[in-house]
Length: 345
Image (cartoon, rainbow, N blue to C red; front, side, top):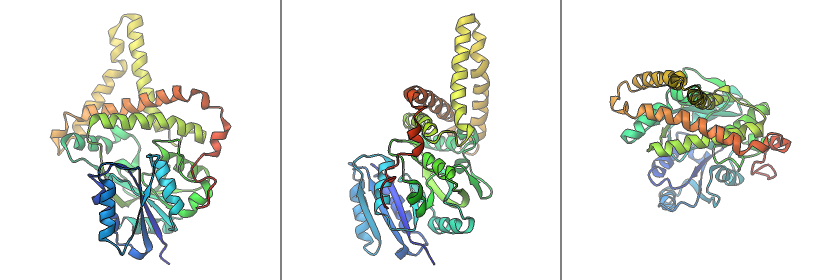
């Protein structure tokens, strides 16, 4: 029996992408009568809402609902949509992405074949400007994002600690609750960590394909990764641990840079400044040359993009340690505080 599916798009001010993203959802090879589309909008003021309504009007045979999200952040968007969703399977799609025509079908098949509670695919990150193309290459590089296999790619399916834009069995949310509404960033990671801690498994399937459009400017990339690092601390506190040790590497790098600078000042030996910065610069330049192959025009931006990924995340993580320094002994946080914890959905 073919399960019903609720596709949820949490968005805000996506006028440049929403028509393509929504069109990709409507072009799925999954039975249309088994799919509802819920667009949870954070009160967009750039014309996004009008486009959603126009697309819905062009497809009266499809179930497309626009849900208001006054809080304007992703976790509240997801929880509001989940409260209205009727599907047995929940597919979370990003407003900055286009899913392949077989995305839903392959995700549902993978859920059934593996017994996983969540399935995700590999993102093919792309950019539409010169800077964005360099950013997309940095975000797809092992040097840039470490062991995040949903970004760097895999040859075969495997169980992992997290995925981006997962497809979930509906019972997951009934059992462990919804998305944590404190987390402006990393709410997917926290949910997936909570899921694995409860005994659920997450499957990464390379046949589940999605195109993700990277940030178009270095300043937006910095803000994105600084917030990733910042809220990763809160995820650690809430879940009582780390899903992967790779999350500590950028903060360790920043601390190493700071320590080498302090030693240089204390000893008067400027060579201490090169103890960490020197090897990193060489590694960055080497990775940039390797990553720029076939698109050499991205080379001038790549070293900066890599630096932003590492420094932004690392500084954000250290800022999070300070910001929530008094929260480590709060046992209540391990109970979760998702917006659906006490709701029937």
